[in-house]
Structure formats: structure tokens, C-alpha cells
Length: 347
Image (tube, rainbow, N blue to C red; front, side, top):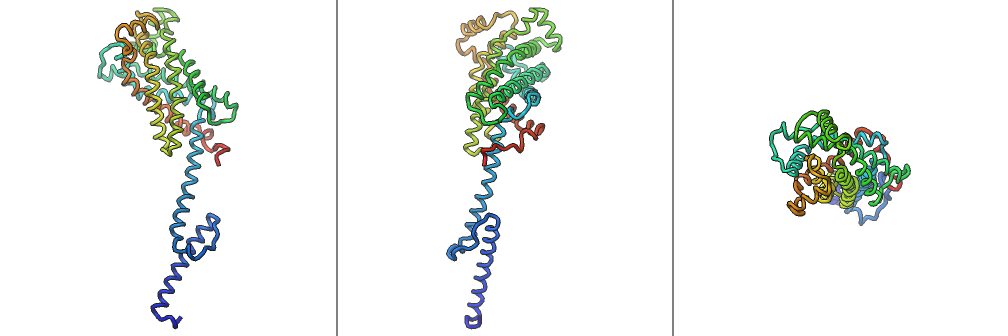
């Protein structure tokens, strides 16, 4: 193009190169996302911005869909596993939690029973095997019963449960776990107070009051476990759903759900737990009604919340450990049942 001059020819060639590069970028992006290749020339200067915006939106959409799929799976873990798998997962979660929170459990029991708290690890961790056995059995039973009831509700088609369905199945699972809870925690508390081996403690309790002596404190234990299970199997998932809607990370949602439901459930169940700890720690005191009257006469309503801070902290840790173990260990042990099963209504 000699008639344009050297400078003008150079500028035209540079502009053509820029336009060709932009069109190549647009054509490449269009081939991936099925956009029309021909655009008005007025759009050409803005092509890089359009490409960036479209690429970012297209990249974020699959992430939201994948997050939704995983979120749906996380609320149907107990529905997707077999009864034996639920029990195994619960035993593991309970044992991990008991070992992790043993200092808080020991402190709470000492405060409730008005016994001096010792910082000696040999005393603080005394009874840890019994505590791990107790919590592993309890959480295993709660996972098993709750999963069994949830599968009855959904009739073999895993889905997102209603709040009433989640709370109802959790309450019944917790109440049923009150049977082993009474025997195991009675043994743990007696062992923490007076030492001795696990078989020796069971033998001493049986020789004292027979078989009925092993179920001392059943009523407060069963009610405590019922509302406890409602907290981490019913209330905590609801808070997690709210966090999901706010686009929080799954771990942050579990933490928020554990703290909110843990503090509430600690307040609801602490009077039962205080009475149970006293009844099981002092074999000379009366039953639930006599213990409740004595507590109220001595300290008023505050007597029922003796040791509440330590127990509230313990329950928040418990709920977090239970839910994280259920999700992470469940996926690690049973990936075929918990992964690659997206809900049909998730597009």
C-alpha cells in the first residue's frame, strides 16, 4: 500500500494484527462455548473483557453445581450407608471424640460432683478407655438407629429430609442409645472417682445392687442422649444448610452448625446431665426426683447448670468431630456409596 505512506502502512498493519488476534481469541472461545463467530465491529475493542467475564462465569458455574452435588450427599450420608457401615462410622467418631475431649469431660464431672480438679494427666485421663468405649458405642448406636429410621422414611430413595423427619429420627436414636449409655457412663464415672479396672468396676456395681444397679440413672441419661442426638443429627445440619446458602465453605458451615447447636443443646441437656452425674457418682444418693429437689434447695436453678461452660465447650467439639468424621472418614471408607451419586434434580 504505497499510496498510504510508510507510517500509515505500519499503523494499518499493526491494527490488522490486533484485530486478527482478538478475532482468533474470540473464535477459540466461541468454539468452546458455541457462541456465534461473527460480531459487529463495534464489539471488537471490548472482546477481551467479554471473554474474561464469560470465561469466569462459565468456570464458576460447574463449581456451584459440584458444590451442590456434594452438599446434597453430605446430608444423606446415613441414608446411603448400610446399617453396619453406619454403626462402624459412629463407633470411630465416638472413640475419636472421647479421646480428644477427655480433659473437658473429666473437668465437667469433677465440677458437677464437687470434687477437686487435678491437673495430673494420670488422673485426668484415668478412665479414657471406658470413655472411648462408651462414646463409641453410643454414637455407633445413634448412627445405626438414625440411619435405619431415615432409610425407612425415604423408602430407599435418598433425599433431603424435612426438619421434622431429621429431628424425629435423631430423638428416637438418642433415646434408644440411653440403654448402653447408662451402663457405660456409670462405669466410667465410678472408675474416674475410685480407680480400678473396667471389669473390676462392673463386678463391684453388680455385687452392690444386682443387675438394676448397672442401670442407675437411666431416665436422665436417655433424655440427655435424645436431645444430644437431635443437636448434631438434626439442628446442626439445618445451620449448615443456611451456611451453604450464604456460600460459606463446608468446613466453616460444620463449625458454625456445631457451635450454634452445641451451645443450645448443652443448655437443654445440662440439667439431665448434672442429675445423672450426681446419681452415678454418689451411689448413696436417691433417684432423679430426690436429686433434683436437693439441687434446687441447695443452689436454686443455678445448681442444675454446674459445670456448664466445660460441657458446652465439650459438646461443640463433639458435634464438630462427629460431623467431620462422618463426612471425611465416611468418604474415605465407603467412597462407592457416598460419591458419584448426584441427585437427579441437580442440573
